[in-house]
Image (cartoon, rainbow, N blue to C red):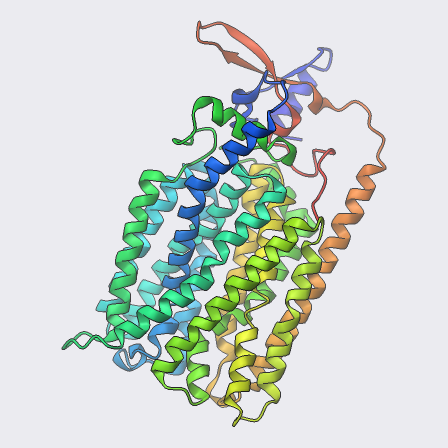
Length: 516
């Protein structure tokens, strides 16, 4: 129970209701307090579509740009960056790792900042800094220079996925969140396609003293800075302040997500919620899943090198990389669509979609080196299982309530994501080339464990739902909480705050049920 509410309960135990500060409840509490009339479904749908039109294109564009920027290192590997900067294999691997170490170190501070400051403004600042850092790659001529700009890149990009997870939970119902997370995450596939064509184009730019990989950095850096300006001007911070919604539509947007039992946001950091996140087993199960699922993600920076080693030319490799993007788009879209239509199916769909990953790894391990088409097919289908991580991102937000608990859980999961991505590059050692059987075997083990973890999480949450259904409902102090609000004439009125807007955690709110 939140500390201030607990004190109010003790002080007012003889009074008929509990009065709390607006700091303790959700930011939307004052907006919806007193609105008990039924919500018109047609109006709710109209507002949701308006939200979709204004924020989804921005989220999808940024996620495309983020992934494209993040993978410029892998694209540059066959454009001359290793030779120009005199990189050894170990140094090249470190450039992939330092991005995620920086991401890891700054992830929790980034989540705290996302809670403290307006989300849209904070993300636009980070996008601007990373756009500048990306462009500065072109000026580097040594490992040290690349190391610094990659570190800055990782620190800034840590705000994006965490920010998107928060914004998605603010604006959408839980059954809508899976599909929206899928929409912005599938832009990773689009990024691979567009990045492939940009890389192909830069290979044909012939300028004295300026190599193709440097053009790639400049072009992607400019695109990123344009996106930063759009976010500063147009991306909303919350449904309670969204510039494109009228005051009446803001109230509808907030009331629409009432059934989530998670509210919108709370700007006050609550230590008790942070500790609850740390003690919650599902936090660490999701974190373990994120770490193991992203050890294989080291393929992002290795894919071009691996495909080239099969005997394809750099030009062929850049174009073949587009197929990876198509596979990712199709599988993520189909996976999240199925999960949104089949009730409580997230774990099952995530586990099933990882089966092609296992098959692809086995093909790469077992096929003869002369069968380069079969080997290429094996590499391609290892992208199908990305759907599992996308579903997990949406799932963790839908099963966690309490704003401080949510940002803490998000931070832990994304830190684990960074740990997996940081460890992964060091599998790819010269001594394992050209077959790289040891890294591929490790990837098989990781994917199998991830399948098991998804099913374990589902079992634990389902059991908790059953336990809550069997609980006897007595008096709940959270059913009678009030705040004071000053009306337009300066009069103070007391308004009852629904449980959904008291910033309760999923453990405190016994009416909360976990989606599966």
